[in-house]
Amino acid sequence: MIFLETDSFEKENLLYETALKEFSEKGYKNASLNSILKNTGISKGTFYYHFQNKEELYTCLLSKALEIKKQLLEKSFSENGLECDIFLLLQMQAENIIEYAFNHKLFYDFSVSFAKEKGNSIYEKVMNGFKPEIDKTFSKIINIAAESGTLRDDIPMEVLERSLKYFFTNLSDILELFYEIKDKEKLLEYYKSFIEILKNGMSKH
Amino acid sequence: MIFLETDSFEKENLLYETALKEFSEKGYKNASLNSILKNTGISKGTFYYHFQNKEELYTCLLSKALEIKKQLLEKSFSENGLECDIFLLLQMQAENIIEYAFNHKLFYDFSVSFAKEKGNSIYEKVMNGFKPEIDKTFSKIINIAAESGTLRDDIPMEVLERSLKYFFTNLSDILELFYEIKDKEKLLEYYKSFIEILKNGMSKH
DNA sequence: TACGGTCTAGACCTACTAGTCTAGACTGGT
DNA sequence: ACCAGTCTAGACTAGTAGGTCTAGACCGTA
Image 1 (cartoon, helix red, strand yellow):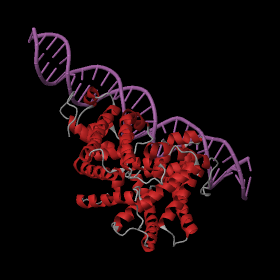
Image 2 (image 1 turned 30 degrees about the vertical axis):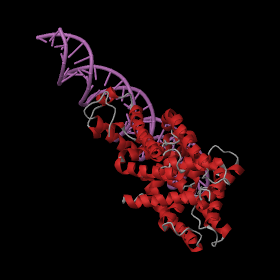
Image 3 (image 1 turned 90 degrees about the vertical axis):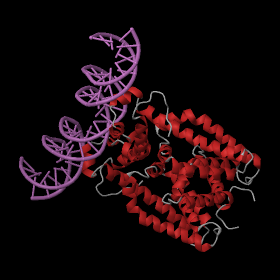
Image 4 (image 1 turned 60 degrees about the horizontal axis):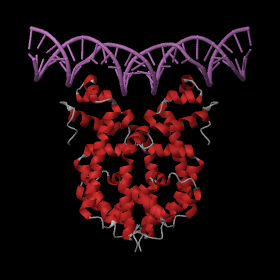
């Protein structure tokens, strides 16, 4: 994990780790800053010297988490080129997310918990800053899907678009489907099957 | 809305309505009992005479919400008989949920917000009581699906099962896909398309 | 009128919250 | 040796949380 280098202090990384856990477990509002500081072993003074408030700590972690997520998507793009099958893209994305979940567990849990903030003011507040970029990336995906001509044309484009957006953004949530499966290979296999369902459905034909 | 008749008091229904809103907006922990009581216009004394604590109020509302949800599923069953196509069942379920969302908005929002409690202790605590029944209902659904022979056999049964369970339990979450669509008919049409995707996929073939 | 049970109001309690403020420890420069 | 800037500790504030407790309103019965 690499964090901002500026304004760094001794226990900075430990603070981030502790905060990631606390926020993931309890959500933004319910997370206790006091508890975070206590578990980190730093004082109020130290904290408020480096951060404006609780919210700044949260957004700091979030921008890191989103940065990683963005890089995952970019990675999926670059590995495939822009001409590729949308389902292959989804699959690459799934693989990357699984990698993410295993290698950056704290950040992964944190972004899962952030998704649950939807509807709360902190979500809107923070998300507004990232929305344009996210929307841009999605319209890119949608364009790829539309132009490739691989999508069914007997289904309203709007439904296809929204469904794709849903599955792309909630992949990690859907991953919870197979939560207790600790074996990475099996998880990957199941995940491929799930995307196969999205591609060709559950029904025998 | 019909509530328990026993131990009823004048502003009981108003209390429930206020509490549903507060819990839906802020989640269990963040919801302020003080605020609920203030907005209802009853005192601590009144509340604690009728309820043991905040949790009992929550579970009371939840059992009502789950009861309604269960009835929806039963309704889907009875309207179709047990021989029916699993996708038809999903569609009936979707229609019922849309009906639910429009006619019991408070309860609907409340169950959406309850789903977000997943991972919190209140969720596990409350859910444990309902889990056996829910699992029973689901194995019923899975059996219908398996016996009917309409599901693909080139996909691991476990993935199919879990996916079905996911879609049945998260239908209302997926409904958020089309959140801003206020036109019921259009919503219904889009929903049918979405289930068509689950059935035959997004890919042209 | 007087009693006893049902119900209600709201002051009060302890625990905890995010955030402020002051005293002082430590450091490098002169 | 002294000073100024950087950084830290933790007591403190104001506010809110869920929950307790007591005084008394109200009502049917006798």
